[in-house]
Each structure stands twice: as C-alpha cells, then as structure tokens.
Image 1: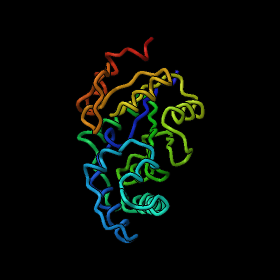
Image 2: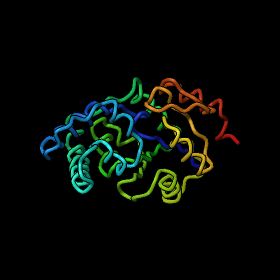
Image 3: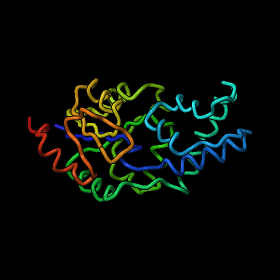
Image 4: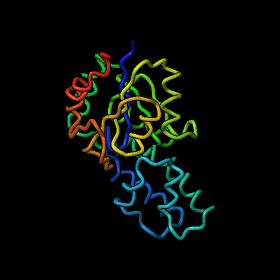
Length: 212
C-alpha cells in the first residue's frame, strides 16, 4: 500500500501573499491599472481558482481585467523565483522527515508554473513525487485530486490544507483532511487540526488511517 500525503500550497506550505501582491501591483501598474491591490484583499482570494482573481480589478472592463490577470499570473512566476514566499516554521524539516515514510504530492488551484516556483525557490523538489493544478487542467481541486490519484496509483492519502474548499475536495475523494489552522482559512468543523507543521506527525499517528 502506498501511504501518501497531498498538500495544498498557499496557507499550508508557505505564505506568499506579500510578494504576490507586490508582483501584481507592479504588473497592473504597467498595464495602466491605477488602483492598488491590498494585501488583505489578495489573501481573501488565495486558494480560489485563478479565474476568480479578476475581482481584484474592480471597475476595470472585463476584457481588460482578464488581460491584466493573465499578465499578472505569468509575471508572478518569474518574480517568485527571485522573491519566494516564506515557508511556515519547520516546514522544510517536516517535509524532509515525512518523505522518508510517505509519498508526498501537491494539488492546488494555482496557475501553471506556481508549484514549480515554490519547489525550486525553496529546494523542495526532491521530496515531492508529483503535483497537479488548476492552471494545467482547468479543473477544480476535487477533480485534480482524482486525476493525481489515478495517475500516480495512490492507494490511501490524506489531504492537508487550510480552507473549507480544501476539506470539501478531500471529502469528495473519500479521504481524511487535516486542517492547517496556521494558514489563511477558517474551517470550523474540521476533525483533525494542526497548529504548526510539526504537529503533522502526531496527528497522523492519532488518526490511525494508514493502519486500517
């Protein structure tokens, strides 16, 4: 049996809100957008499909907003390579240790290239076997988890994320969910909760999921 852990990115592995906001404001300004994106507004969109981020350009005609959105998404990737987000405390050490006993994966609603930027900038590529995202498939998280499970022949997996949509995507795939409360979301009724990445070990042990 393959024991697997699937991670969300923003609010789970790292916090990149500040640098993403900076990148988008630089791109938007070059595109003629006069309003400034607030970091709190950006945080409110994190975890949603990239198409939803058009809401960060209120008052901009839809065609123009979509054009700016596309440029922001593309330029953000290059920006992240030089200005990476911040991994949560002890995350790298946790990932390293987990990779000894579990196959690690990522599924996110991000654009194509975003996960690669995280893995490269934070030197995490050796520890993750595969990933899937909205930008590559055009599908939402629940379906992307199914795609990943099929492609990688995953037997049993736990999904770790920080939002209600993360939990719903896990439930849609019949897998347990661990809520990363240190992230950006607010999940009231999660059964399994971690307050720091280091708590993943103890929580998995208590779940006894892989021994069933």
